[in-house]
Length: 270
Image (tube, rainbow, N blue to C red):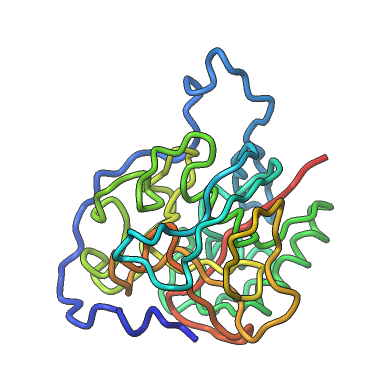
């Protein structure tokens, strides 16, 4: 599918630039007076640590309004979605973590332990997650498309911005206009929940089959029962800012592997 290729910028001549970076992780002051009971969870596998950030459940409007001239038809109609609490990876899965789980294997085109792993298919991700779960005793998985969009929008802390960096400014994430044609180390460009690179850097696989929206309200949706393509979200270093909007949707066959396609983990704890 990869409809984003139709809109990718071909004049990728921009030199790399320094973004207005901020450290990842939630702001403890945000919970003053409210008191979230969820706390970030850190896991270590093979000497590699990774953090899962709390995402308090709630209701939101998924998709784009008819008035949004940037939106594709598959972003409509808007519909109400209610989600339970979950945890999401603070960053995209790094090459270091992938290697720690996959016995040193690293399929990535752009090599570096703190770079996001890429050139991994949806099927590869299932193998990785199964091994990670065996090593940790947990039940990590890919996010549902609804979980991904809710988290990218900032969850209950959302400021209503179009990008997963919690900003109106595309120069707060890595896209075709500033990436210098490559991935960049994870851990910058956080949104309201402290989740990094929810827009740009690499596309992120979701668990759902790709399908059309309906206007019906849903609770913890998991997408169509069958399909030909798995959902991809977030855009990448190769794509225009338009393709990196929090509502933008794309998909690929479960065996697709690209150097701008990776993953992010989700976890629910008892």
